Image (spheres, rainbow, N blue to C red):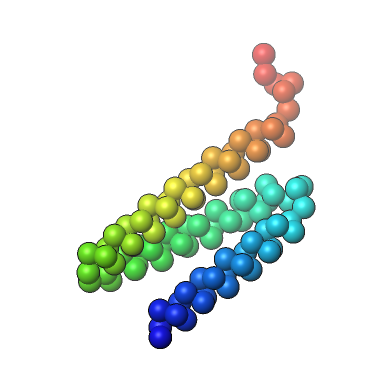
Length: 95
């Protein structure tokens, strides 16, 4: 029964996240991306804790994928944020 509760929580979180993000105005995407990088860091730490407590090889594979995907998501968020912030810099200082 615990698996069904966990699946329900994941589905509820995915639906809620989709609804919230789809209603964000375009002008707020850069600050939202910066804020979500913090959340991705917490996801990586949580995945690392889950991986440390893994007993079976299936749990280790899922934990490793969680760490890998979470780290990729965090790094990608920082890259996108940096590129977006570059657009706001003045071009007068460049030669």
